[in-house]
Length: 240
Image (cartoon, rainbow, N blue to C red; front, top):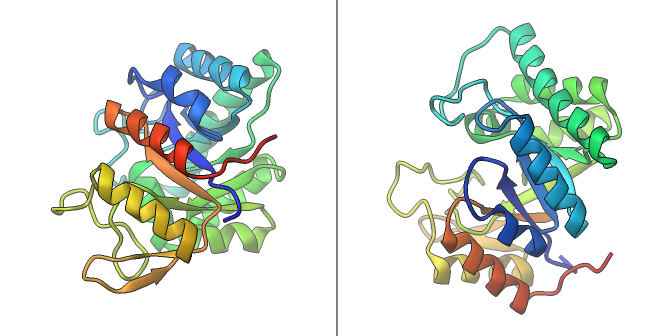
């Protein structure tokens, strides 16, 4: 990585969106599946526009009760219809604001499911291509989703995580496991490792090479804000 690009999940009802926005390069905006409505999308899009931040749709399983963090077995047509509705909801808000959606990043359980399930990854990638082939697709570096996006001709954005521990197969340690979410010191060390060495140490100590284009921080607490401020002081940022 020549520059360190940061992305964050925003528009989910937490209070730090406005403070985080000037520090990030890409905003993954909730568009109704797990969180978000027209008003929250509009407010977040306006913030992104003001700071020159690229806008990404952040669709999920239609599951507001569990914040999109539980896998939902759904017939393919129903899932595609839900994802299409979420994407177009954000696209409509962006058209109103005079900006555009640049990419799509699935949220929560859907993110993890498409990272490991080739058929589901192919379904999502093909659906996005059919909606708008100019959209990029953001997914876990080395995952099935990245492969599926490349296969259909989408631009892919390979994502790594600053504040989550990895398993040796490149997946994230589940949140239910101890040590899954890294504290400030460990997260900064992980970003440093990504930046300088092109990889991280996985749970258990094994080395995991990661070719990443963007690093995610979670935007739901003050910890994330302090972390983003520290990252911006320590690593170079692309100047547009």
